[in-house]
Amino acid sequence: MESQSSDIDILKQYLKSWEGLRDDQIEFERLAGLSNVIWKVTALAENIVPKSVVYRKFATSSEFVDRSLENYIFNELSKANLGPLCFGYSSKFRIEEYYDCNEVADEDIRNQDIRRKLAKNLAALHSIKLSKVDERPYILKNIEEGYYLKEIEKKLANTEFSEDELKIIDEIKKTLFSQDEIDFLTSILPKSPESVTFSHNDLHAGNILHLKESEEYLFIDCEYSSYNYRGFDIANLFVETILDYTHDESPFYKIREERYPPKNELEDFVKYYAFFKVIAPKDLNEEEAAAFLEDSAVLDQYLKTTDRLVEFIEAVDQIMYEASIGKLLSHYHWTMWSVIFSKKKETKFDYIAYANDRFKLYEKSKAEFLAKKVKID
Image (cartoon, rainbow, N blue to C red):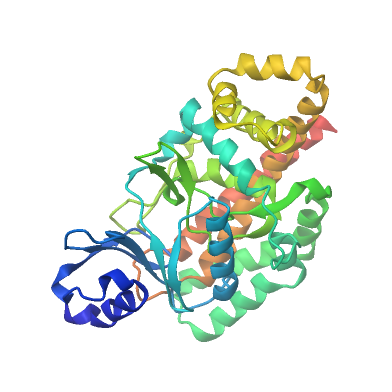
């Protein structure tokens, strides 16, 4: 495999058990990924451990990503059993533990059993403390420091866009970077310290593994992870159910708004997230946790007997409100990201069209948010 000989050399360097393999005993299989080039690499020989690994080659650009920090986060999550093992890394690649797993589909978020397990896992991720990571919320930091605008201006100065694309970008800039819009966003951002947690920041079905051996679910691809508003992750998981990235014709995605889960499913997710994040005892074992997940009556009984029902209801209400803000922030952030990440030679994906669609969804979600807020007020 001439074109991948340098990759094979890297793998042999970090995987000592692979050192004696011939190049034709190492097989590459391309995996899906918008931001990076990702391979499943398998040793075609007996009694080799690890048999397969994930070989992730980072995109050449570094927008939104500090690779050194990303690798630190990856290792810390691995230590906390919240992520795969790392066999080696640099600023250009990472070699990761490969899991035999089933694909998680967007519609799985609609499955009650799966949804509740994901809520429990997200509560665990949001409870981790990482000392080397800036605790300022990611979205707020980017807005306050003008990062989005700086990167878009840099993109415009160094990239050739069509007239139609420039019109889309100009409309996004005029609206989302106006002082009125910035004032609006900063005014609705959650103010409570509990609202800011270590977050995944790119949570969707494609970044979740369903492990065959243990039947557990694992969050992967934490390259955008940082401290952020917890409502962002919750909302993003649900927003992504309407986005189909498997479409094989331009613009290589489809938006299906009718697939957005109903409110009662979001409430069920938040209910279990709030329980495991705020209420559940720290020494809760897996068997006890499973009982809560399987039967909401067990949860209701626990809340009554511990006299924490009022606290729980308040937490659920607060997190539901934060998720409504998170829905706006998700569309806002990915609109910016799409412009900044556009015109990559290695992908046919139409990032400008995607930015325009996320921008329209932002405006629609904002109108819905304001309508509900008026009713509340």
